[in-house]
Length: 224
Image (cartoon, rainbow, N blue to C red; front, side):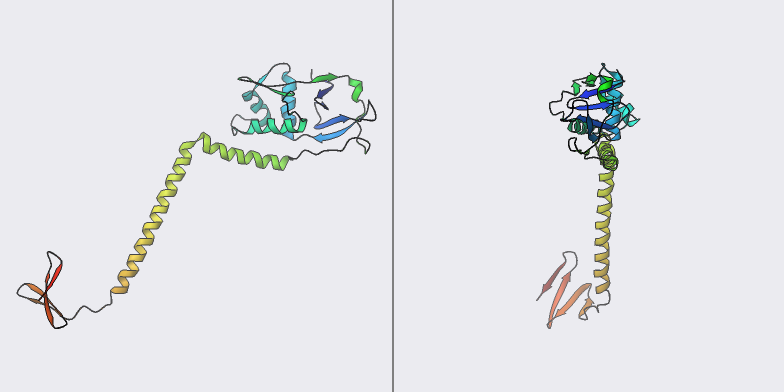
């Protein structure tokens, strides 16, 4: 089932090409370019066609399309959404999700002669480019992968937050230490109060010709 042209909804496609075709409304046997698949959209359709009529699990699709098992949890759903948008599969009748299993492709086989000479001329319908090119797709996958680190490794996020908190605390304490040091140094050169004497084991402070006794144990100044 991997040879020949396939009818995916209103589009026609052949494995080996990233171009989707539509029929020319003025001619039954003429077709023109409709849109171009991204590499990952092409890989997705290719692996589903190769497995037809079986349903591929999400893990199997990921290994074929991304060549790895470790990707963001949103990568495959986002790819499915964008591929459905390109195929105009709003009713989800082309890319079919079998709950609890995975995805399969629903298509019709077209005769080999029907698309013998695809056309790309002004008489065809308006060419519509896929909105996500390879550079944009790579950016999306990078962002999704970064997001997956936060979800799949919560301990790493916790560690980063904890280290950030400790660093912020140390910065605050350092700022306080610098402030108190500056305040201390600003008072270090002040001359001591000249009217303080020690008499009979008492500290006497003279204020405006009044003698006051400083009670050190109570930190009180008693004036007569």
